[in-house]
Amino acid sequence: MKIVVDLNRCQGYAQCAFLAPQVFEMHGEEALLYTPLAPEHERERVRRAAAACPVQAILVEEETGPDVR
Image 1 (tube, rainbow, N blue to C red):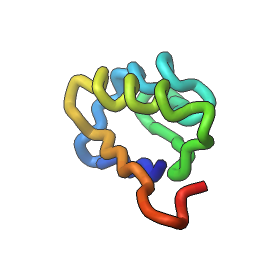
Image 2 (image 1 turned 135 degrees about the vertical axis):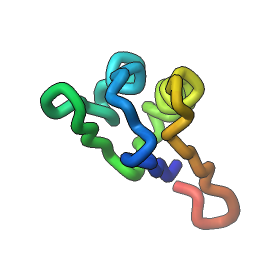
Image 3 (image 1 turned 180 degrees about the vertical axis):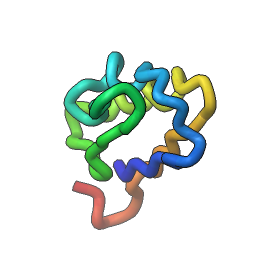
Image 4 (image 1 turned 30 degrees about the vertical axis):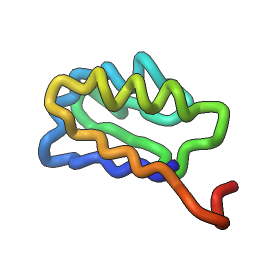
């Protein structure tokens, strides 16, 4: 699972950091840090975090095909 966050769109609401703290982390009050490749066990949390983003700044790309890990 690949994650891309539009940091220009992100407003720092931190819903993602609350729902998937192993993948998303707020640095200060406005800067978001995130892991662009989510581990297998975090996938459902990442999906929920993306859905909860008030400004829809999180894009989740599911890996498909023979290279899926």
